[in-house]
Structure formats: structure tokens, C-alpha cells
Length: 478
Image (cartoon, rainbow, N blue to C red; front, side):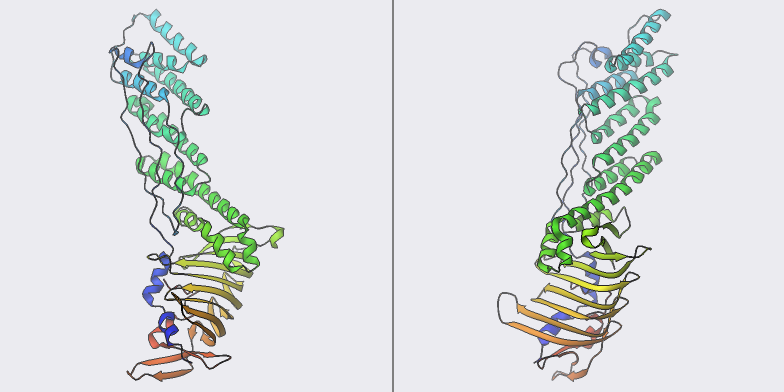
């Protein structure tokens, strides 16, 4: 019985192989940073910035700033969840910036210029700082900033008062760390002498943000891109965010692996529950997480499963630029070794109804299957094929005899065709057992023969390099 139908759909092309790298991708969801708007309350209390400037009743409102960061890259048909929005800072920021803008703008502060009045002003500023009245301290130091000969004292006082004031607001939940970048930018532009101080505070703020989003790879990715784009000319800020994000992303990936393993995925894989494995994988966004994380860390990343799972490890790998999950052993160099299983899924990037899933158990050495292997697969493309295969590999290439048992069902209904075939390979390349010439003059090669009934599988010469086993580890159709 001929299986020409299978042959036409089984042989992948070089173009298909190249497309496998992008399989499973989806449109990138937008990741939106919290909207940050600075505005003082309508009614200013006594001693407000408006009065200090000498224009009573006039409100000072900083311009609205809205961040639109680059979207996180997503490697999955299912979009990643959009991170939660943060809290915007409250009126403290507007008050401080208004005061400093007035000082930096050369506002006409009215005071008694004798030495006694200046000393009294310095004392009031120090007392306000000690008592935690940071607004008064900032206001008074801002007045001193405009007095010749007292700028240095005023700048040092402002550093302390502003730092303590911001720490207080953050600790009381009145502002989110991510909302403070604009604030420190305002400080730097208002008082030039505070530029280096503000830059250090921006770096510190970046660290706080990394800590806040430490379990969210997509937010870490957005934070990293926004910060580097905004402060590309600051080595301090860029080196700080880079040094903090990379290890945080690695930890987040390990946490995601732990969550997936804990969902029952590891047990289902070890027990050989094919359908359950891919059901749980579909419900997880581990591939999206790892695809985004690949810009910051090197793979594989793995965790230990513990005694309940025979002390095996659970890792996420990129083999030939394709993602796969592995459960098994590793050697001292961190390479796969001994008995292990590989779980792989690819989806057509243009049509997620077309996909393939495979589950391969084998004996690994130096990160490659070398020895006996067996696997189960489901491929939905032009038809639905489900089956299992068994044979041997050498350096990740099928070598020698391989048996394949599968059921092929036409999409939309129809009869099931059952195939029980034997193939032979030489380091990944099928070895034809017969050559046939069609009536139209084209030549086809018999590469599979039936074990139980008379069956054959043929393919054209140009497809010999793209049959089972010729590509390391995977036979992606997309």
C-alpha cells in the first residue's frame, strides 16, 4: 500500500527549517508603565511655593508625563498578562519641585539681609530638618540658596531634606519607586549643584524598581529598556540597572520553572502523560518568559526537582534556537547526561491551529542523545498524525534502524490510515531501499517499508535531507 499522501506532507523544505526558529511567536502585547502626573493641590497652605515666588494664588503645575515603553517581547500564542499599574506620587513632589524651581529661577526672596537674620534662617532650617518638617526645611534652604555665600550650606541641607522627605513618602506608600524618575529629573534641572546627587538617586530608584518587579520578567524588561533609553548618557545609571536586572531575570525564570514543575508538569512528564504535559504547558507562559529573558541571561536555566523526582533537574534550553524543556540529569559541566526526556512544542506563527508536539526519552552524553531513544508525537498540519517512534541516535542524529507507528487522519473527518514502518538512517540521512520512476518521469525513493503489512513511504530526492533525523533533535514543520 503506497503512502504518497504522507510523503508529500512529510518532507519539510529548507524554508520550513529556517522558519522553525520563530515558531510559537505571537503579536506583542503592550506593557504600560504607570501614568505619572505632577500637580499640587488646588489650595496651597501658608508658606506655599506660590506665595514664596511672590505671585499669590498662582498654581505651579509640572507638565504631565506619560511613559509609553517598548512592549515586552512575547514567544507564545497566548499573550502575557499586562503588569499592574503603580501609584503616582502625591503632592509632596509638586511642592518640592515648585520650591526649587522658584529658587533656581532667581525668585526675589524678601528677607532682612543682616547676619543675624541669616543665622536665624540657618537655625530654623536645621531645626525643621531635625524635627522631620521637611517641607519647611526645603523651603528655608531654598531661600538660603539664593543668598550669596550660603549656597553650599543650602545645597547640603537640600540633599538631606529631600532624601529624607522622599524616603518618608515611599515608606508611607504615598509614591511608587517607578514614579520617582521624573521627580529626580526635576531636582537635577532645578538646582544644577544637585545633578550628581540626583543621578545617584535615580540609580538607587532603579534598584528599588528591580526589587519591586523581581518576579515579573516582562516588567523588568520594560524597566530596563525605559531606563537605558532615558539615561543612555549616564554610565552610573546604565551600569546600575544592567547589573541589577540580569540576575533578577535569572531568578524570575527559575521561579517560573518552579511554578510549572509544581503545577504537576514534572510528574506528568515522568509518568509519560503526553496530553496532560501539553495541556499544562499551554496554560503556562514559560516560553514567553524565557524568550523575553533570553536578552539578559544565558540558557539553559535549571532547577532541582528534589528526592520525590529522583533528584532530577528541570531545565529550559534553546537548542538550535528552538525552545525545549528537559527533565533528567546533568554532568559537572552543566551538560545533559544520562537518562533524560525532552518536551518540545512548536506552533505555526501564522496559524496556531497548525502545530507539532513531541516528547523524546533518550540517553544523553555531552548534551546530546547518543544511544537508544523513544518518543511520542502529535503533528497537526495538512492532516492529524499521532504516533510513536523508537531507534538509536548518534550525536543527536538518528543512526541505524528506526520504527514508526502512527495514525494519520484527514482534517475535517475521514478514514484513519495506520502505518507501521521501518526506516534506516546513516548519521541522520535516510537510506533509500528502492528507486521508483513515475509516469511523468520524476524519481522517488522508498525510504520506509511496512513491518506487518505491505506498506511503503516514498519521497523525492530533494526531500532526503529533510526527513526524520536529519536535523539535530527537532523535525519542526514550521
